[in-house]
Length: 171
Image 1: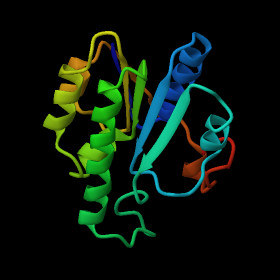
Image 2: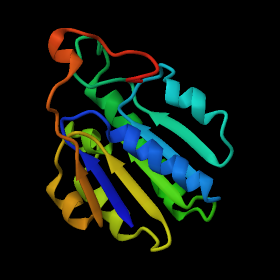
Image 3: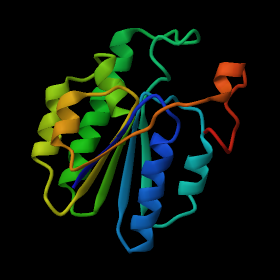
Image 4: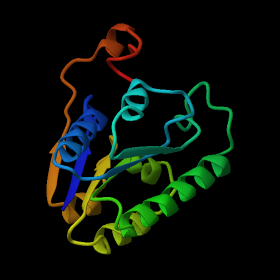
């Protein structure tokens, strides 16, 4: 099954992590591959370190084009391609039942990886695996190939009032 969580609302990664937690409870093994997100340690990483059967790897230098981004596009692209290779290995590994590609939609939107490569991942994913894709941008072909799609729609957000992300709540 392929599942996509997308949209401008909060909760895409949270939904994917909730699914991962449910899978762990059923004895499944999970691999989470994060694109875009930088090397800062998030609260979800701290939690994941304490749970057997789940692994997380980051392949990003932070949000592309953000005011604090001082990296070249080619550096972001290189990291995303490493993440894509790791995704392919995880999908083909008998070790993992669920593979989460967190923020992969952004990696496509920012031209860090080609959409066609992700389409190939989906089409070649073994039927017994669950593949989860997240990221705000709506990628039409990924949505068409997905078995389950949920759009997170922003109604109201603290950022709109100038309230920054809160550790343990937002990251």
